[in-house]
Image: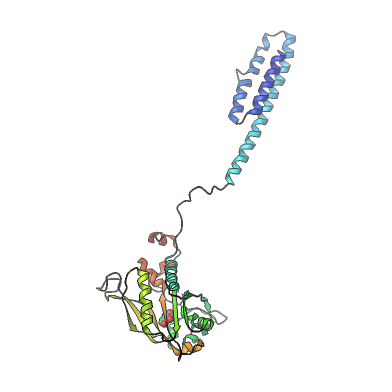
Length: 342
Ligand code: DAH
């Protein structure tokens, strides 16, 4: 009997040692301590033994039962700990091969148009410059021929800082700095965010984007301006675009123009977009005023140039059929989703 129990003990402990899961442990428990388990049967049989032997066997069998029970408990704890460790390991493991959920964002329409324009201008030899958003009054106004008390300032009311600086109202504010930096000849574009103190509606925002451009060289003429604008806009709209110039007044150009494009939606026959006029006003421009060249330390007798101030926000609206300027700054992700821009 004693030998048999020693064997059971050896066997059970060995099995427990090798068990790899809680289920296996449970099976071992049933096999030894369950109703019909090996140890349970020995205990049940005690009643058939002689008193002396019963005492002896009972003592050993109970000790064995207790030992196996304890071993089962400690094995369970060990396995549970292992499982927990495994789980933690898996949680901190980032599987880079798992496919990404399809909530990839999209570029903003203004960014897309800006990048497109930058590429086109770069291919025509223009450099891309950056302007400040906070500017001096001099750069924003005086240096582009809008002295103090000039009536043209009224159209560009803006936000003033306590130190006398302002949020720039136009990308033209960078003209002077760029001329001083590079001198002539010069070909540059400078996109940027502009600010005006406006009463807001579908076509007026206090924050909007422009892209200014300048080309200065010997004998630059209005034909150069028309050529560049036509090429550029045809690229943007991916089709041949007709342009026309109307006189327009801007203190920093002489002569100054409003450049219109033939309506790309109706081809000029008249529709809602062009307000039935057949043409859409798109880009103010002109030949740089001699005063502006002089302030940029460029000799107007030797050099001439054109400048333009393309409304980027406006262009993006036209390109993507957006009818309210305020949507562009709304920060509402649904706007981008709705436009389905990739
Ligand atoms: N800065 C002008 C504005 O915001 C736009 C403009 C007009 C820019 C004519 C130019 C230009 O460079 O030549 O209203």
